[in-house]
Length: 142
Ligand code: SF4
Ligand code: SF4
Image 1: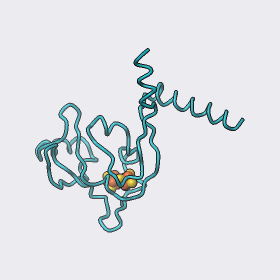
Image 2 (image 1 turned 180 degrees about the vertical axis):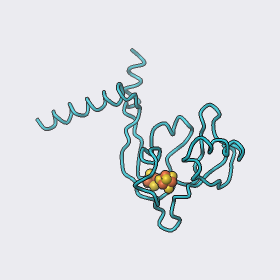
Image 3 (image 1 turned 90 degrees about the horizontal axis):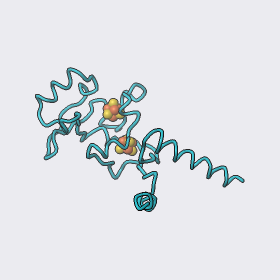
Image 4 (image 1 turned 60 degrees about the vertical axis):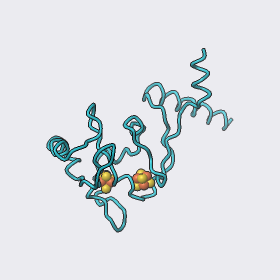
């Protein structure tokens, strides 16, 4: 009986995530507090893609307050990389944890994949596909 209820719950969860929330991944795990996601951040700004110049970034800061807390760390072939000034370098904790913005509260979201991002190996979260490869293949072959 218990296994049957779990199965119903899992099927409902799957339907809700896929059809209502339009998600493709479940988020599993929990934060280990490594602070890696608060540094080496790329800023992806809509159709323009990753921010590549200081001038572009300064313009963005005028409209989005979150970006005013980022300092440029460096750059690579994708664009500028940033570090959040609210990350405590010693404890690796967020100094505004209870007041952190939604983008941090909801991290990691599957949208990071669409933006070309990945989760660091240290991250305690995993994004697991809701539908297995076999399920998707079987749908496509119908
Ligand atoms: S506000 Fe806190 S959680 Fe968000 S990026 Fe900065 S240090 Fe990290
Ligand atoms: S990278 Fe993952 S485990 Fe590390 S602080 Fe960010 S969310 Fe937490």
